[in-house]
Length: 182
Image 1 (cartoon, rainbow, N blue to C red):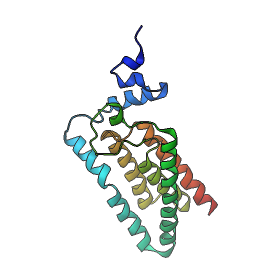
Image 2: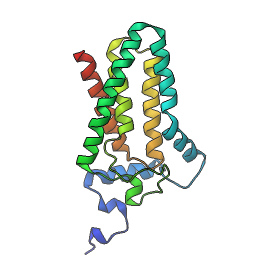
Image 3: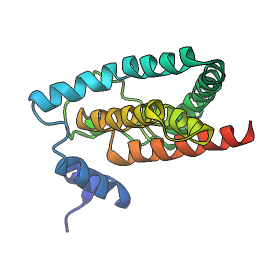
Image 4: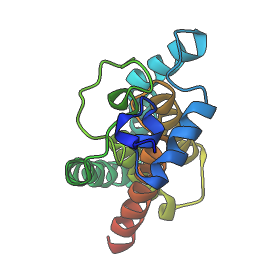
């Protein structure tokens, strides 16, 4: 009988639900050898905060109401970041590169990656803004940047798909809850 701990296949070393995550990660072609898509993913994973800051700055400059909205959204995102890091420390689920599925393309630390803090923070910004008006271009851009960043961080090997999905979902829910309570 074959014992999983003697396997060189990282899929067999993961909890049951994570096996599907590994399969999806592989299906996406994530973490593969350098190519133009991987280079783009690395760039987006590192620099997507810049267009996010531009969008938030544009919102804050437009009018006083949006300025207050952006301020409260950023405070919420700061608290969500702390919550996300505590969750990751508690759950201690490794990143794809830490289990040998790919190289560490972003030179990330080996700390746990579930849920994705990037996804949770960006999800909270999007969730916080949703109840405050129709889905305008700025809010759509925040959501699009969050989704693109999530894809990039998976493709670059920093996260499994469920890390990002959980981060976006938890962040959006927390952002909505805070927005509804203010």
